[in-house]
Length: 234
Image 1 (tube, rainbow, N blue to C red):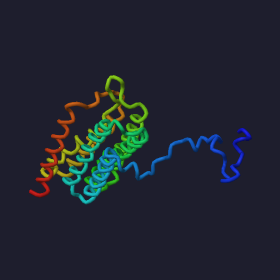
Image 2: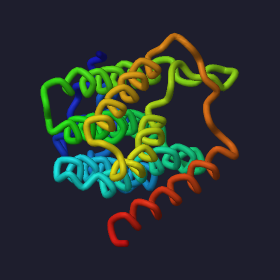
Image 3: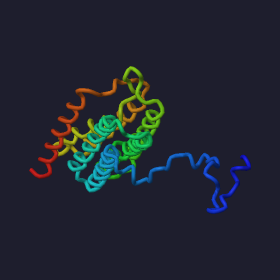
Image 4: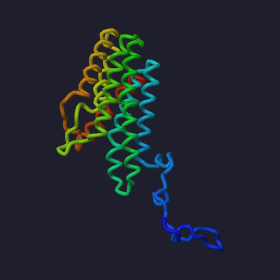
């Protein structure tokens, strides 16, 4: 550093303005954590976490129709937070990076832990159901970490089965739960979840569901929501 950088203004007793700035002084100020919550896509992602948490709560209570509704809406919010984010051209790089990390953390709660708790609760928290629940959570964590690193291929394909498919597959099964034998349904649910866990990390690639799939999934979830609401209030 030059000697001139240390000269002091005799009047203000401060360094002269031509003194060089440090690297820290030149960096832009960091946003506060809560400032990221003002972002609409991040609000949608956090709303999905709330739905996932409600799904866990209702599952523990044994209110499976309500748990299905909450889990399905967590999946729906997960479908739409990305397109909404991409539709905001002025979104900063910090918001994009934060939103990407937040989305993965939200997915493991809403689409990994929530269905795992549903399995455990339906199995009356019998230890025999722990391996299936743990398999789903571990597969979800591995898949999300892999996706964060490699993302979508240039040709629009992704590795393994996306995590939201678990919610979309499990939910309609519960439409027939009340007319099924409890033990038989528990065994079927266990098997389906184990198969889904394997598919999440299986070495195959699937086309990312975009375009008209948004309309299909929206109608699908709204329809299931109506059916489960009828079970609750009908």
